Amino acid sequence: MTKSVTLKLISLQCTFTDEIDGDEVFLKYLGKKIWPRGLYSSMKAGNKDMGIELKKIPIDEPLIIEVWDYDFFSKNDLLGKFTMVLDENHGSYQTMMIPTKTDDFASYTMVWEIM
Image (cartoon, rainbow, N blue to C red; front, top):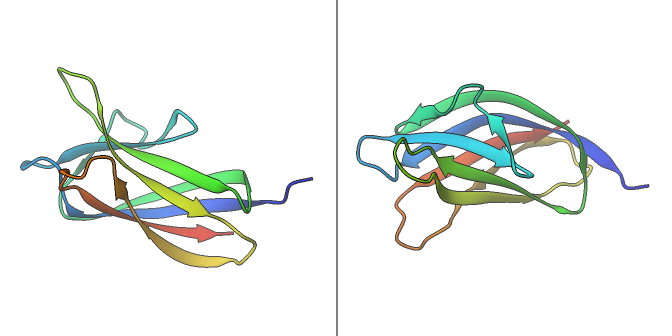
């Protein structure tokens, strides 16, 4: 039986946005939107509290959370991905987003905790 943990997504920190007037961000895990409750969260430089718990996440396997930018008149854009490998060590961590394209300016960091 594979061991699992609960992953708490604490906050999303934006250093640089992809668009000049800010990004309309939402997150996906395993193809399903997990944050925010509405269509998107408007992001400029700074933090957004998340308070999301993902339960029964297998350890020692890559976990990928996608960062998307909501577009009103065209297809949504995948800005990048957070890739984490969880273990049984409880505590707080930070992971930087890996951009999808090399010419993207967006820079995000996820603060998370293994419970």
